[in-house]
Image (tube, rainbow, N blue to C red; front, side):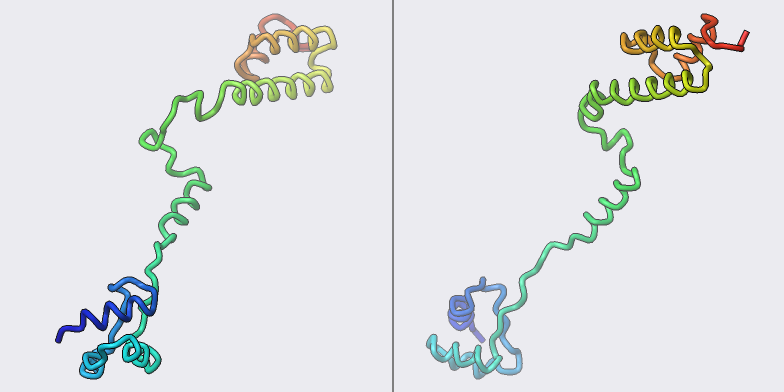
Length: 151
């Protein structure tokens, strides 16, 4: 049974594509008799012809990936795009380091591990980029006898 005309008319009336037109398989005879727009409209009202729902794109997988990324997963070498300095800019890396150093210096001064003069000297050195981490700074202070009571 050829229902192309009815399908085309129904698609036009329902404002959907041809593939989204559903025709009741038990009322095919009745549908084939409708050859005018009015006839097809009547069948739509009766429920013999309907528009199928739109197919969406499932966001399940993308949500799952997002959750994993929030946990810090999926960051291996295969996922890395962009240079090292693009992923964590130079400035950000510097800020992280210098803040840690300055915090450590402050603690050392408050606990009187170092005196104000040593604090100032190490502070300036840190600012100049002499230390790459807290441990390097502490080792430097120990090696140059800057730490009190650690002879």
